[in-house]
Image (cartoon, rainbow, N blue to C red; front, side, top):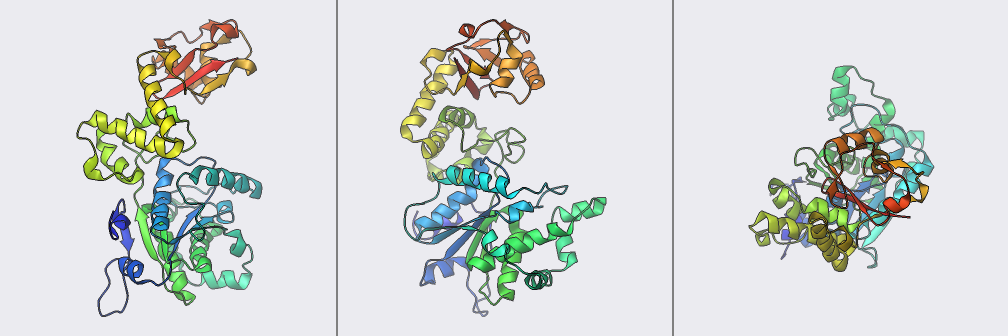
Length: 401
């Protein structure tokens, strides 16, 4: 893409965007074009879990676009703020994590974003932990931060207002979260902060704090919240409508090749660099191109093409021709074993009760053949070794000893 056209692809809002010509201010495009130094582009992530899905990849991809344009990406690991937990969009107080939990989660996050960000080019990436500055704040500095924002402003924040109206508890440490995230922008002198549309309050607060501390306020750049594979609710692991970055190539491909027609354009725009006018008009061809493109990015071209061939083989029931099916060892299973237990133990379902429901609903196949006997018994491992257990159209495991 030429000029600064890359900047607005897949963006919901840039603020402030329009400025008065008499004010002497600039908009983001002007700052990008006129700056005599690489801009500092901030993205903060709180490692409150272990998995990142494609929804999380969207601001990461925009961060990479800034890197490719010659700017410096500042990836802030919220090892301090994660112990509070972002209250945005939450109807109740979040459990506070331990330092060890946060540290372990942070390492998995970094491993998963390596295919997205440029970790190699000198000067293009700074990885910072906000405990570096937040853990050293004294009471005087905390009082100074608290004095910049009113209780009314905090209660206007989505989530807080709903909880207050319902009479649900709001703890004082939760008010500190947006202030601390905003102070991150002060500490690293951010020019731009990236975030989802649900982060506008926190990013705007960062602008206010920078102004308070005598810095030039950052621009906010908001990206859309990705709808999940169900096309209804935002992508979420708890809702089961997600595609995780850590998933194997076949699982990722199988999920994406079934993307609904209504989601195809947004998925292409937000998850790939392909020109939108190059999307095939035939929805089936578009689905395959989307799946192949995304899987190639995270697993490489060879793995993506093999996943495509294996997905075709599995649909046709040719399980022996599928090479990239995830494997599950039967060594930990005590035989005789019932079908519902195997579906659960292999990780295809979260629980035995869920496995029972899936089997009864006709969603489970063994080597391409539908199995509906919940209590079907397998006496020895040899009854299963080499066979593929399938749940729905997207989940597979091959049994090994």
